[in-house]
Amino acid sequence: MSAEQIERILESTTEDGSGAEPHVARNYAPLEVTIARGEGAWVTDVDGRRYLDLLAAYSAVNFGHRHPALVAALTEQLGRVALTSRAFRNDRLEPFAAALAQLCGKDLVLPMNTGAEAVETGIKVARAWGYRVKGVRDGAARIIVANGNFHGRTTTIVGFSDDESARDGFGPFTPGFDVVPYGDAEAIAQAITDDTVAVLVEPIQGEGGVIIPPEGYLRRIREICDERNVLFIADEIQSGLGRVGTTFACDREGVVPDMYLLGKALGGGLLPVSAVVADEDVLGVIRPGEHGSTFGGNPLAAAVGLQAVEMLASGEFQERATALGAHLREGLEALVGHGVTAVRVAGLWAGVDIDPSRGTGREIAERLLERGVLVKDTHGQTIRIAPPIVVRATELDWALEQLRFVLGS
Image (cartoon, rainbow, N blue to C red; front, side, top):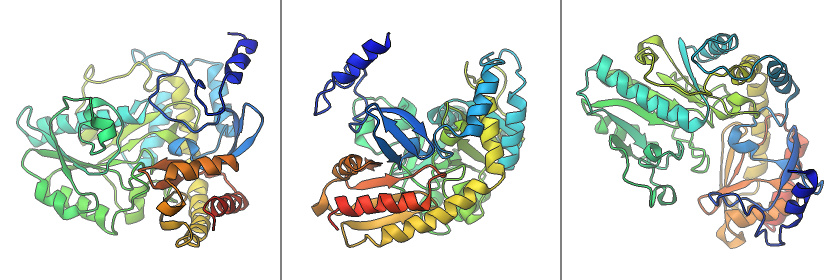
């Protein structure tokens, strides 16, 4: 397709946005902006207007758009080889796996592509561990999950979601999951049976609106899992890799799960990279031929993932998220009672509940868009704020001024 044809398509967009993407399936309802470029914490639309990105692709762009070190790693590897499949070894995979295993304090890494694939892989590993190590009866394994969860959109995963928009019309669903209230560790203890193989939770629920559990929740889960011989699986796909001011959200309570599920920022905002990370006695249950992916662990992804891990190993991004997060918290808390009913902040990640009298979360996001700020709504009255960690404090201040304006405060 020529540049002229692309330009005609973009110019065909109507004022209300209808016809903007006539050939794209309507599984999203995006805000009415068409982004053409990005750099750091900013993106530019097709008309040349700049916007401060406070979503960072749901934490996939933690390092900012087109971070030079990540782009250099990608470009260098593109000049060598991009894809081999796991039918052969490649010279980038083991260095990436070694660095990621060290970052997590674990033995083994099983590379995949998307976050949902990491979750599906974690489920398979947990079930295999249950049958081959714990001795659960074949076909009887059960996994405990929390309500309000968001682990992806595959049919297995939406089967244990309580979000009807994700579930309705997609059954029948995979059995083997028990749902308990999020933040209630004793409900987990009560739900465990001899057939329970794992507890799968988000240390902080991102899609739910940055829902932070009570202090001690993760520590108590760790204790319960140890007492009952059950795996603790932490879905750190959004919360991990520097977002909350620590490498992992579990670090906030000094907890190490049996299995990390990682993604999003692991690909440096350049391409999809995900991974399951655990020790040999857990991840070692998977045998050749039982699980795989054509693209999982490809040399291009491994080269970018290695660079992302090395950047995290310095601690710079975690420190920056901590400092900027405290600054963001102060600004947001000043809005409570002035168009905001509540805020929840963990590092550089915030859920902001909008007073219904000022509009819905979607309406506030649309008004912010008009003023050059990109956020995303969730669950009706909440907007999420998760800027690239390279954002400046002055840029956050400017964004807060725009939020104050659209709230009429």
